[in-house]
Image (cartoon, rainbow, N blue to C red; front, side, top):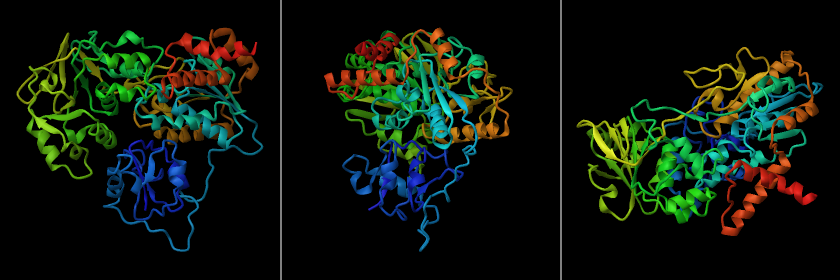
Length: 550
């Protein structure tokens, strides 16, 4: 029996670090690392020790013979297929392998006699927490966690789909650092509004910005600003109870068809949520208002528009595979362009296009009602098609025989995230990121970036681990070289400054109180948690513990 990696793989390579026989690839020192959609276990060299499954932060690794029970039997073949064209990797006889990457190495560390440095990390999503973890595990640094929202998590809390709970379990790994003795937490503090970037820098040896990419890319077509045109980033935030998106921001009661522009993972996420049985979603932590809206939803069909063909779909194969397993949902490919069918028919077994062979192929009549009168909900892929103009109640799209009007009361733009300028830092408008060299911000000594604001909106959660390692390595090299600016103020002075400026500061104890409150609300309805969806609610929950102690 061997193990296999499945859909929820986060690519952060924790499993590789513990594998005693080097059977998981690609590794961080291989060219394909960060480019493949997931990691893969070689069934020819796996020794069934289970170390990878124990270490996996998102529960993505299972014994191959247990996959059928989990409905993921395809992943045994997916893992094996990765190695079909690669040389076998036998375990060296008589030579124990204690670490898959070679001898243990701790380059990201400071000399034992080096005085502790104070580092502020702005942003508590995966990128920021990987950086904090690296600093806390490999150095004696003191870390200040800052976030503009009164709750931690960032994209992990507000960007991961609620029906992917395993992906969010990596948050448990990060949570253990929230109460670390060398960590101070200031949630609900906006750098650039409550305090300036200069003030933050004046109280720390270095500042690491992990603020992500909160904006969305534009389509550049007429009608994009109409109320019916909604950024998928806002839709994701809406169903995840983000406090900056109002519950009434999305109305699904009067539209039978939703058009989603894009075929990336976010596009598939929103399509899946729109057609999933609400009773299934009721077992997740989806926002209460979103669950109620989906129960009352009139949506019966979601159309995914792709400018290119199925062979170029930007989603990952595991997410596409999962889309075909939705109960009560038909997967349809609009056969309007002969290139689409040809690409699917000629696709190799490892190509994403091959996963659409089980979909119904038909020439969709867009003048009819969504679903053509069928009882099931459906997802329609329309490849080689792009929006030309968005109108109230319809969207004009390109096609093989000329433009086609697709009636739809809502258009979701899912063509990518985009970084926003950061107060006090330079910004590259073309890249939507902060210019840097190895994470060091150009022209700003002591300032560093990590995650999407550093490299652009690419790569999943696990990609931030290696990204953070590079940034932290650069920061520590600068510390050893003596090039970090000396802070003018200390930790206590910073505490006084922040609490004098920000109205609702939440610390680690307050965050724990929010966690308890949300889980308690979930227990009342048989759900894992019910999120608090407004800043006042979050702050009130954080302060409830103080009132109890009085």
